[in-house]
Image (cartoon, rainbow, N blue to C red):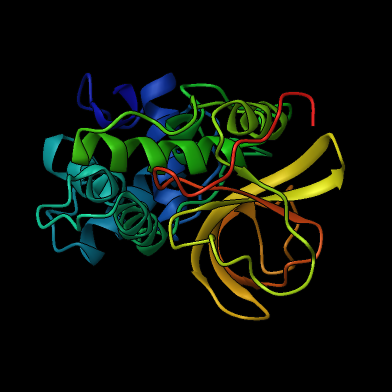
Length: 257
């Protein structure tokens, strides 16, 4: 994965994609600097500040050790969970919690940065809303961890996920009231705009009688489907449908319904 690889040592006067990546990670670590691909004096000062915070030699040069410290949050999110729960849904939640702990968010513009590229297969930019990319990435990690197939094919589209879930018998229409009994941790929730249009998707952490706890990407504290981070939220069940990941958990929904 290129965002986790340093092709060359970077220092004052360098330019290009590697420098831009370094600037993105510096900003994600709270050492904000212009993300312009130019390693000037400001970037060198930011690197030195980061190195001091991580107790590295503060020489302003990004070599192997400094770069490893920069990308450590993503490396942690990608590390396999050793002690796996037996249920797929529980492992989905465990991976979602691991990602959340690393504070994934956009940097350098709308739907941009290394976290967005991770979840969106290298894509980024205004058209690439990444809520579905995040949910599917975490689901895929869990499926690979247990050696089981994906319950629905991965997609960057909420509508495509809903359609596939219906075809696979894993779609559950919400009633808007109390939690459906079938919704277990690790299920995906869909925010419904119309009967055939969904605008946001995330992961159910816990489904209680009148609300659920979620972890979701491309959102924020206000619950916007065009937010900037991965966060934990509490949501009601109004205008929500679900994709169930457990075998046999949903009734078959006829195509086109």
